[in-house]
Amino acid sequence: MIEDVHWFAGIDWAMQSHSVGLLDAEGRQVARREFAHGGAGLTELCDWLLEKTKAAPGQIAVAIEMPHGPVVEMLLEHGFAVFAINPKQLDRFRDRFTVAGAKDDRRDAHVLADSLRTDRAAFRRLVVDDPTMIELREWSRMADELQQERTRLANRLRQQLWRYYPQATKLTDDVADEWFLALWQKVPTPDRAAKASEKAIARVPLVSRTRCNALGIAA
Image (spheres, rainbow, N blue to C red):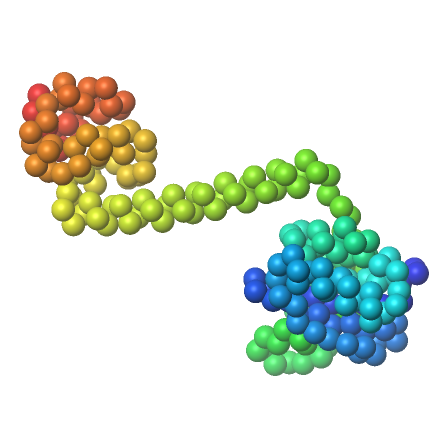
């Protein structure tokens, strides 16, 4: 048991909404509800936990599968005792309640809450991160998203080039490279490449004579 904690909540989070189950110290289900993801929905979640329990935030332990993110940050900022568990460990606890393989958000929320109540050692207590770490995590997330977007757009560009300008796709494996985009801007079509001279595009970095010849650019 967790000292001074009298209520246990489990949150099965998702991108659009979160399923929440609330138990008392004896494991009886007090309430359960769905909350939309977003500032208003998460604020409503925190208010709902306080209203249902009539307890201080520190007396409410919340179990969740992820160690960080908007849901965790909101709960920590409001003073709740937040605990994370590895999804593989949660699978083992789920077997206590059912052998069915189909996912059930409300059941998972209940499993999270009850497992925290009975097996605290399997969970990790979360604390508010240093602001620098939060900033670094956000920058890292944005970098990952931008890289994914770059890859998606490069694949679309390669498909278009393959349709009308296949010789251009042979110049590089990464058609999103700055030098390739600069070259493409100079000679966007086979016809323009045939009429261009090597001297005309000499200022484009990394464009060698071999690459010019591949596009049919005259020396």
